[in-house]
Amino acid sequence: MFSKRRLSSTLVGSIATVALLAACAGGSTTDAGTSGETDDAGTSAGSDDKFRIVTVSKIEGITWFQRMSEGVDLFNDEFSDVVEAYQTGPQNHDPAEQVQIVEDLIAQGVDALIVVPIDPVGIGPLLQRARDAGIIVGVTEATALVDSSQVDFDVEAFDNNTFGRGFGEGLCERMGGTGEYATSVGQLTSESHMLWLAGAIEYIEENCPDMVNVSPTPYENQNDDQVGYDLAKEILGTHPNLAGYIGTTPAGVSGMARALAEANKTTIVNTGLSLPSVVGPEFVEGWSAYAQGWDPAGWGWALNAVALRMLQGEEITDGLDLGWPGYESVNIIRENNGSLLIEGSDIQPYDPTTFPDGNFPF
Image (spheres, rainbow, N blue to C red):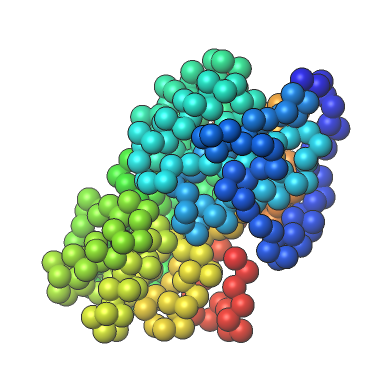
């Protein structure tokens, strides 16, 4: 392995424009997400003179993590002289499947692991084992692992409470401050989803006390489109007076949109997490009213940028530019025994007026 000081101290510099141009050009993504040869398991064999960074998603095959893999691929292309970076992940939203993938990557001796944990608490000891083995370990949507010092860093696209309160404000305004609403998350073990929902409910209770949450324990949509749809039908059948809904996954929002369209229910305010390309048509058809998100490609880029900088022995500091909009001046929120919590500022709200020309950025 070459010297960890091979790169200059300015790791990513002013390359946002290059990344965005590549994204707009529709950069392709391969199954392995790397130009290296693959073994029978579909993982890259790696090269001795490059750092091998592997990103493990919650689930492959859905729009959100496909977009994230595009960012990982762009990063790999930009730094191909020093890295092999690619994304993999479970085919189902299954913590055990994700754990097995991480175990295999630890055994292969990758240089850095980036994980979007399905169950942060459950996978924590395994990530600690990777860190103890000298692997740089990064996560996102798992801030509790920073507190336990089981990872080297966590990159969040934004402050989770602020993001969640935006959901609450979006629903509150569009429901007129009154009526019943339901909520769903991917899984109850998903730290970020629960934090966002807590922020949303906090906002609603403070500003719209006449709104009633019919599901204090949120429903689980498993980040799965079919489950999200079936769940939406169940919610509509169980709560005939429902006036609003927050889904913290695109599957939750789109599932509700589909159920509302089939039932021709036009009075229920459907809000939550989504991407422009997914929620845009739902806005046009009138089955979604408000959404928030961030660019998963930038998320993938930023996580890999921090991992590579750490592999090069470079310092991560307040104000560091990771080379993607929303991460031009990141904040170090806290540090615990070498574990860093890093925040960007990539909150993107959408409503039916956001894309009047029908052109969705991603």
